[in-house]
Image (cartoon, rainbow, N blue to C red):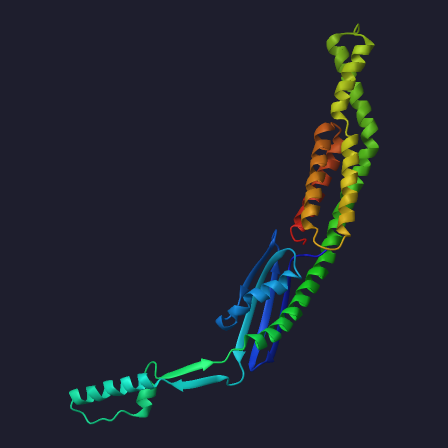
Length: 288
């Protein structure tokens, strides 16, 4: 069992740059990825998503990639046409103002468009670095999710044990509950219909009500759901959705037991089971 929360960070250098990858994993119903890269690496976003999809099934992934130059890998060129245009403009201005100031090189290079700066970006070389950093960060996230998953499994099992203990007590009381219902119904029929009511009619009427209040089927189904829950918990891979479905089914059986049984002791155990199941479902929100 794995949780859906985790964190990973890795950084490294190569191809004249320093690069870092940060991955935050949060709980959500499906796999949702938000990838943030600088413009120079946006072309690699699809490859980043593809690599992460192979490691995660559910969860919200917030991926942040940062890059900075550690070596001069830029080239500077001169736009001669722009320089000539600026020089002509300054010369014309000088004549209009009847000045004799000459246009300096320093003045020209400060004008827009005269110098062009470009940085070489090798996406192939960057991907080699980035892929390794993503792998390292992913290992960290998965390790944290697995560690938290162990704690989740322990907490969930403790609540399942509460449900199981309450169910065993209810199962022990079930025959007694039926006898009490039967005796209560018999007394009411005699009170309403009188002593001359035929035994057969009383038995028929009582049997019909007993069927409506019988909780044995619910007990068996709840035991089955508990067993299936534990079996599925031990299976590797994503299981959160299936476990949540089983928890819903358990809730239905618990509610039915509570509505059918008039015994106060059973009602108390039903409350305990509902409380424990609510804690289970709360933990399942973070199970992958």
